[in-house]
Image (tube, rainbow, N blue to C red; front, side):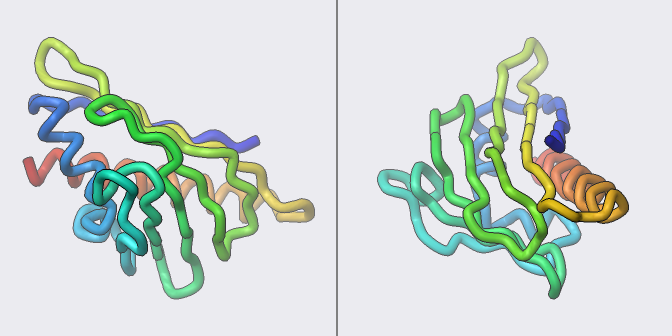
Length: 144
């Protein structure tokens, strides 16, 4: 199983950071993505539980993700239910924790590569996904 984990600390309130990190359509303004959009609004909150987002890193790859858990100002979880990448997603979680100086985010995503996938492809997907997550977290910081 491949695990991606990134962390970032912020000198802002977790409420302010939460509003940015859950604005799924804005990810394209933080990272080198071709597109990021909200495909379907959540049940009780626009970007909340049951929301569906589409992340398009480039013209050859996309991810359709559903928000599967939503604990406002604390964490949200998501599941990639359709993708052009050769992966089987096991879920992702973004956690916010209050600190003395603001808050920190921990973002973890786990997946398996499709059988027969070359190790070079696995390394490339892990590396590009890690970079994308980091760019989003740093981009959030820069906009606050």
